[in-house]
Structure formats: structure tokens, C-alpha cells
Picture (tube, rainbow, N blue to C red):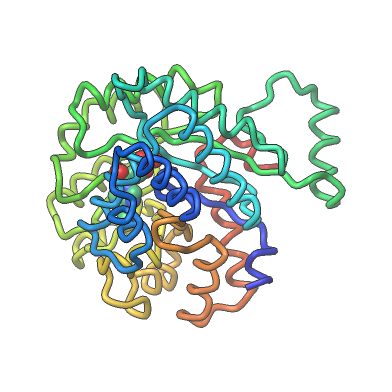
Length: 348
Ligand code: 6MZ
């Protein structure tokens, strides 16, 4: 495990509210319990439960969202999540979250993301690069890169945001999210994600917003095939997103199409096993995609909810599929190609 932690890693599929420490969730629940807003013992059991079906996971997210509704808490969890990924030696993180409007807390989608950004900026255990530094002159930039290369620089994590559209949302709310992402591009937002309970909603509802995003040059990743739905899977692949997440319930035809189109897949082993989307890790489609040399990236999905870390995901892939350190290092390195940030960040 030590070796997997020491390896620099890239995380491209991590949901903010799924990556919260259990200790923080319990503390927030205790506070709300004392205020009489929830019954702590009920929520405690839900937070600490380990095995959940996919539909139970979405019930848990509803509970988590009750605990994280105000700006201060959103800022706190964002800071802690970055600290945790940095401690696991993640050097580039694309963190995704659904901008939430909550009138009772005076929260708009914009102020929610501003609270997330404030949390990221307040990290001081590690240097955080949150957006392209246009004001850095060439020699300063070269100097900074040398520091990183020769190991004398301080520990650093690049963080970029993806704004998620939740499948429960309306077409208008999705468009609002895309417009917000465009307005916040200089602040560290690099793309759009479509996620949420796959049994809810119609992805076509979001097509106008997704097409608009693409027209404006915003890269898109889609949760695709978390449940069997061949028509939706085919339509999503035909849309040619820059990446997809999961790709669990693909039939032969969909697999063939995926491989032909070479769309990179964000693989979340523990999440898929815990939610029983895949029966067991040894039959996970990672093996088939890896053997086919298909572009893929190991990711955590919800490190808090599934009690995992990116190092643990690498170790699990290595031990299950018999891959050595060289192969695991190459897999981690290859992920650079699939990040949504600019070429300069890729080079760094
Ligand atoms: C689909 C998921 C997910 O956005 O509030 N989310 N969507 N499949 C999954 N597999 C288990 N895990 C998380 O983070 C929580 C939200 O991320 C999405 C859901 O919409 C969930 O409500 P944020 O930060």
C-alpha cells in the first residue's frame, strides 16, 4: 500500500459530497441532531453502513445533502476533501459537484460553487494550483517546473472543477449549470458531468445544455451504463463525450462501439462492487478494456461513501488482475492524456 500511496496519481472521477470523511459527516449530523433538525441515531446508522445497493446510495446522498446545505459547511468539506486527496499523493484532481440552489439558505448555484472555491483556496497543508496562472512569466514558470521535477519543490496538487448536472434536474437548471461553468472557466472550472440516479430522468432532457456546452468548448463526461439501458448507452456514445464514467452494463454491441470510438472510461472498481453493479471484482470489465488497450483511468467515485482511496483502487486492480508496479505506473501516467485542463498543466 505504501508504494501505491507514494506513486503520483491523477483522479478524474470524484464527487465532492461522496468524498466527505465519515468523522465530518458524523460531526455535522451530531450538530443537527442537537438542534433537533434530525434524529442523530437514525442518521449515524445510515452513514456507517458499509454495503449499499445503488438505490440505497442515492438515499444516502439525500441524507448527506441535508448535512451540507450551508455555505460554511460546503467550504469546510471542500477543503478537507482536497487535503485527503493530496495526502494520498493525488497530484491532479478533477473534483465534480452539482451546483445547488437552496433559497432557505440564501444559496444560488453560483454561491455554492464560490463556497467550494473558497474551501479549495483555504487549503494550506499543500500548495494548490486552482487555475491557469496567466500572470506567471516564462522564466518563473520554468523555474517552478524544475523545482517539481528535481523534487525540491513543495508538495503541490492541481485541482480543477467539473460542474455536474443531476438527472433529477430540469432542462433549464442544466442550462444554468452550463452557463455558470462558462462564466467560471478562469476560476478553475474545466468541464461538465452528467450524473445522478441512473434510474431517474431521461438523458435527452439535458441534450440541449450538453450540446451548448460542447459548442462553447467545454469538455463533457457522462455517467454511462451504470444500469442496463442499451438505447441510452448507444445515444450517449454517439454524442461522443470526451470521457464516460462506469460503462458497467454494456452488451456486446455497446462494447464494440465503445472500443471503436476509443472513448476513455473512468473506472470505479470499489463503487461498482459495493453497489452490486458488477457481481465481483474479478469479472469487472476493467480486464477486458485493459487487455484491449482501451483508454481507461482508475478513479474512486465516492471515497467517503465507499471507504476507499485512489491508492486502494490501484492496489485492488493490481492484485485482482495480476498487474505489476510498472504496469500500474504506466496506467497512472497515461491518465495525463485524458485530463480536461490545458496542455501546460499536462506538461507540468
Ligand atoms: C451516479 C453519482 C454517483 O454533486 O452533491 N453521484 N451519480 N452514480 C454514482 N455512483 C455511485 N455517485 C455520486 O455529489 C453527490 C452527487 O454525485 C452524484 C449524485 O448526483 C450525488 O447526489 P455532489 O457533490
